Amino acid sequence: MSLSRTHPSWVPYFFIAPFLIIFSVFMVYPLLNSISLSAFQSYGPQFSTFVGLDNFKNVFQDPDFWTAVKNTLIYSCASVMIQLPLALGLAMLLNRPDVKAKGFFRLIFFSPALVGLVFVAILFGLLLGARDGLVNETLRHVIPGFPAEFFWLQRYVMPALILASLWIYVGFNMVYFLAALQSINRDQIEAAMIDGANALQRFVHVILPAIKPVAGFVVLLSIIGSLQLFELPFILLGGAGPENRGLTLVMYLYQNGFEQNDLGYASAIGWILAIFLMGIAIVHRRLTREEL
Image (cartoon, rainbow, N blue to C red):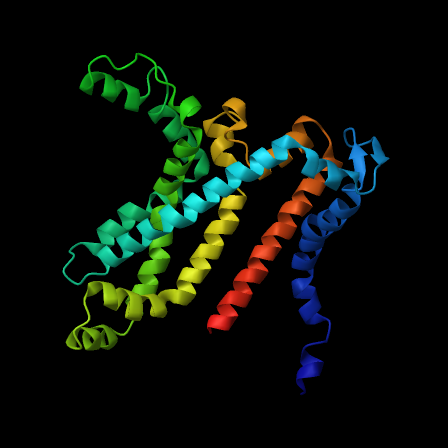
């Protein structure tokens, strides 16, 4: 008996139909609808006015948009320039053969990534609270004359966000780097040591080239994730923070779409962000392809 007779041609489509239906309803349709919606100025879900490309023009003329761009880029640069070197340093430390209890330390460093951004925002809100925050309580006992109320989340908005993200993401990215380091052939490192290469030379000429594909992936993942920052400042600051110092691109989209009920304007913001993310992905792909 032939395979076509025992398994009709429609059987594969029957099994993938649930996925196709769910994907079309919750992904394809909203995506296509947002394209047309970006050409309208909406007043809630039932009233809208066609404005063409004015939404895109108004986005670039809005000072709040550029404030959101600046804050998001600062956070993104910190994610790449501070977070990833720390993650790589921890990975190299745990990859040393003389380190004991590696599994325990891997769990300790990775565990913050398991709790989620909402928990992290609440935790750092308790730590940096003005009146009864743990940081202020500790400093008042250590430093004589320390102010009774020091508003960390008003004076140092971006450092607080960066510090919270470091706590949750350094261990997460460390796992990627550790996996890449463990895949390096030890013979190459030992050969470099025999040739007289010091630790820095071994890192630059042996380790970095070996982990470059993983490092490129982690950099791309960190940039895309940081450009989509929303939950952490929204919960930690209760919004955009003082003088919009915690305003991000996704929060700017949320404010216009769900607080001001202009879904058309929010769709335009979303497509600007999506095009920017696609541009970053294309540039990254071209750079990595040239290196390979």
